[in-house]
Amino acid sequence: MVITETIILKTKGDTDVIDITPQLEKHLVESNLENGVVTVFVTGSTAGITTIEYEPGLVADIKEAFERIAPKSIPYAHNERWGDGNGYSHIRASLLGASIVIPFENKKMVLGTWQQIVLVDFDNRARSRQIVVQIMGE
Image 1 (cartoon, rainbow, N blue to C red):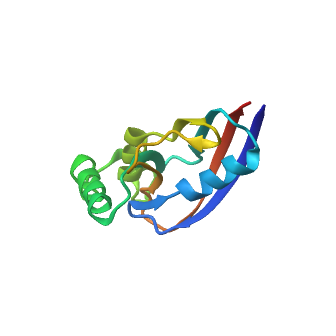
Image 2: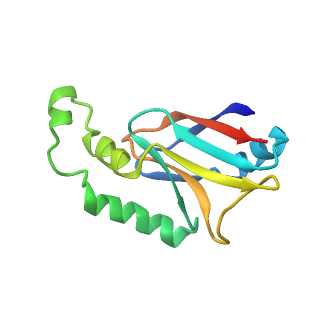
Image 3: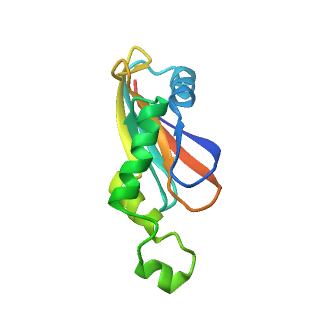
């Protein structure tokens, strides 16, 4: 069986890191599926999905790491073409990736003790984000 759900979130942009694990757990329990996989996908090209230990120190570290990898302050051809100033956001999102697949057993995602699933919004402005959750299993 395949069940598709949607999560809508308001974000602040600027490498906003949001723990979406509780919403995913809720959708999984409501699916009444015992075992399978959950695919999580964010629509749009300036946000990504990953797992981290969601705590303030690591959230700050993630933001600083992406600033070192794709700084806001350097020129981007995308900015020259579109004038929206978010070229760095597209680069960061492409490096992180738009989706993740998590196995589940007995209605629980198979995650490490300190592992949470997060949305990272890299855009240079607040956004409304749509996350597609597809649960496949039996």
